[in-house]
Length: 377
Image (cartoon, rainbow, N blue to C red; front, side, top):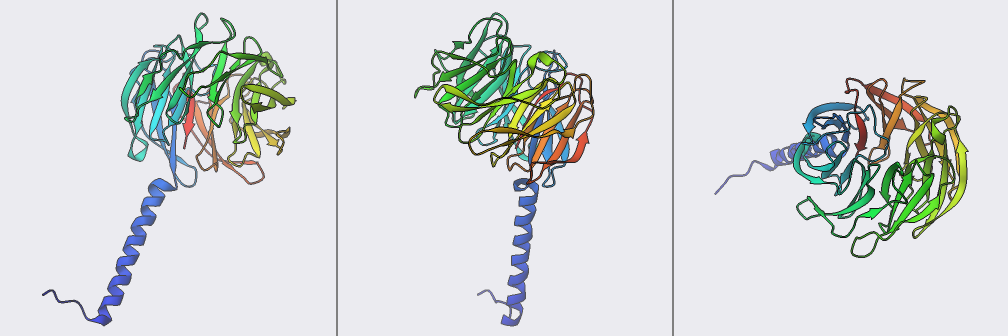
């Protein structure tokens, strides 16, 4: 028979054990649950890769490694698109487009933000530069001049992509110069912006996952580029106006099925060459990146979707008068914004404040000159 310690000793021993368990739980939460991940791609023309960062609870980043996609990027100093690197299946998979080799790489996301390459699969067209997911569906935007289309895939239970037969759909025309594909929040509609035609295409998604024919609609402003959805379906689209200095703007739309209705037409921000758009988790603010100005602008989104400029310069990443701020992503909890600057070759971290303002956390240098795309969780 095992002898127990005297009662006067048992209580302190149990208390110590509880403290050890609590410390272990807190340590686990701080290492994983309270932090997250950030990824960007090298976009190297011969050997594309992903640069992986571990995100701490205070928003700071630590690089953990660089992982080859097995494909090739475009080799250019930027991509003319939003959404080339995305997290899927609750952050367990990372999808990366290889614009130079016309395929998509699938990574398993492991502990400490490290990646394991699982698959490369043909994109269904030429120069894939944007991908979107909803549940187990994925669609890739192929931006090639002669073969711009969207092509569908399913994410299998093993977390791999399988081509969805009969899902490829052309855009409004050849040489449309598309910028982004994205599912609506309910997954029933796909949206594509066309920079070359000043149009926005919407595709109804059937119960079988296949997109219907494009419904082509004029954009509210010139050169529609990146966009983001609020959870209620409100859509915010950036407008580059042909990169004219000082003409950057954004518009908002309501979405009912595959039909878009403008709410705010062309709210200017006085900056140049606007690119990406993200919306905060509470749906109150939108941030857009201005490549020509090296800045981030902020907008307030009203309950009815009306868009109002909050700060023309909410943050500056360091480059002006050339290639600057490009791609942006919010952390999964909405507390931090990350934006890349292709001029300074940095990933820039900002804390998102309750009033919509941004506070600089840090900038992380040492990126290759071709890097593009960003995803965060």
